[in-house]
Length: 106
Length: 240
Image (cartoon, rainbow over all chains, first blue to last red; front, side, top):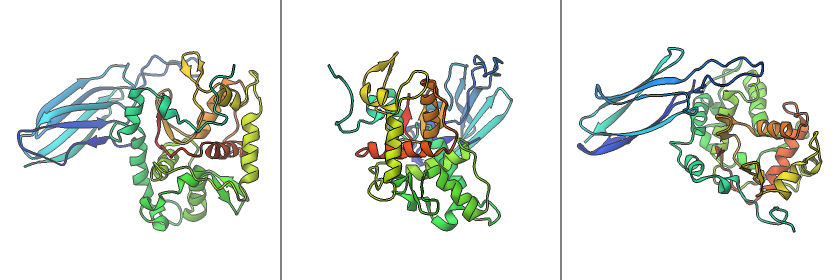
């Protein structure tokens, strides 16, 4: 599976809010479709997503089957200190994936 | 009365017909899902493969050196005296220069490398040399484009030239320019190659799809690149 595309500013001024954008590679199979033999294709979606910043939860989302493949999320956080943004998401196979990115607060 | 059609007009990219949301996805590299494959391609570019343990970068250097290459493809391959597509050229490199196995058509790895090379030429005008040895193959591609086929007895030109700008059900019929491949189609929910799109059209007119790497598939890709002259490379394009 390809790595996600994460887009955050490298540096932010303390107290400013900044945008976090993440595009995750995932098929997001809805479970509603059938293959060419009429057999149901098992559901395989990311069902939960969490982002922490310097150890503190800043964003959490539950996903449902109507979300398209390769979901894109954009949300904001306020810069308090230099630290790691950690993104964690779990899919129906139980696979927990994560990625991190460092942000410098001046 | 004749309406629509593109016979003598400047080519019109499918981008202009797409909705504002789709155009926004293509315009913003952080939202364009095609960049997931570009990123994967960047990893593969420097990854040693095959019996000679060489990577793309060993011979070609940084991938930015490939700027302009995709705008010239499909190109003439003197060794076989036939045109060769970018994906076929990548596989040729793998078997001849890396001693590696061919990447299967439509595999993520082949799409990733093709997209990575093509995105270097983004914004450059398509520049196929139609004066040299490619001429007979371009002519063969045009014959394919204008030949009716399938149970519905439609040629490519019937829809994408005569009826371009009209609707098929709720969908607008585009002029069918292949300047953004590999491209992300929302209908596919993934990135796909031009041959995949061609197979979908051929199934649509109830013809037998061309096998992978059929000469006609390369010829039509070549003819479309000449036909779309004036447009720029849009890879990875986003289309509905």
